[in-house]
Length: 221
Picture (spheres, rainbow, N blue to C red):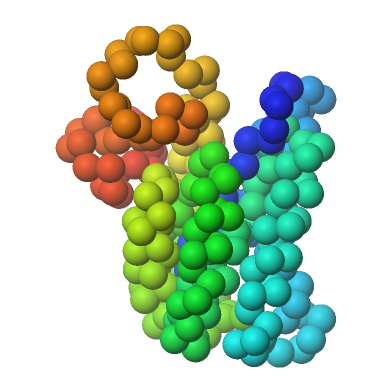
């Protein structure tokens, strides 16, 4: 697989919703001899492990910038990059923890360079994981902030739900659909007038609501 620039898959979601597990599973499933796949880990986790604490408000911007830098570095020499996560999650955490919304503009601009956004659903059990996790009570507020930020940025996303292999297959269905070749120029030109033709936009065929949770594309019986 050869692309002029890597196809970037962004994994977003509240704490303990399986982003890191899904990133590893996607890397294993998508990588082949002809397709170089990179998984960019969460720099915030690395920071907390190294410092033995969560970041201060004045450290948030640097953490967001480093996450973006690592994604861009991986983009340069891979075909697919799986980002766990993007600067947008740091902006959300800054908002949730400190009430600081200053990082949203730059984070949304950086996130716009991603080709596919997968939002991990809240349907798996919360698990403690050291310094980073505050408790299950913060998952719904964080999920709401992520969705609001994506909405403000005009970024399409697909929700992936289920556990284990079901969650992976839901994500892979989104990825494979997104990687399908674009229609020929002029084909069905009026269907999405004004839309960015270089990006994939999925709409639920059952209800037409672009934000519908059925966008998980779970395997049908």
